[in-house]
Image 1 (cartoon, one colour):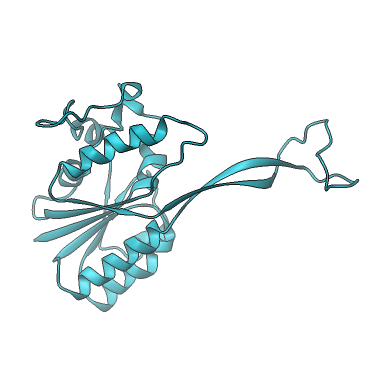
Image 2: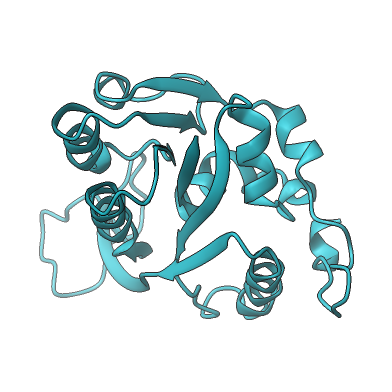
Length: 216
């Protein structure tokens, strides 16, 4: 059956890849094929991400560009962009330091510190909208969502319960959110061996696109 895959790129990264640099050169179509039953013929993979900032890591945009180029070498993969924001925020701390915070605070001083807060905006909304739109248009016979974001519960519920189409959950965590499990048609877990076997070649054949050296 024709199957569309919807991948929350940042959820995948922070849940499975951030601490596994050698596995970041990941072919998400190959991964999807590996974890789904043979009856699911993966005809499209929608990958949702945002352009990262180089404020904290000047080389991060270059590494991301290389990876996005690798994804674009696969005809079935489509990349959809949200926005990546970095802002300064005051946040509570567990063990307050001995020093006093700067103005405008006055005694008694709150137990806070200023931190960089990074947020990705738009991907979950885009993913949910596209999942429902494609279902209404009859673009797929089944779908699978790779995420553990509970904001996706309602669009998945609409497709499974109101439109009657199966939507699976490709879980990037051992214990996916109960609210997601309650609305999906099936759950598939990603094993470390699935990540190992779904790596792109280096370089990408027919291109000059290479895996970043820090990911080796």
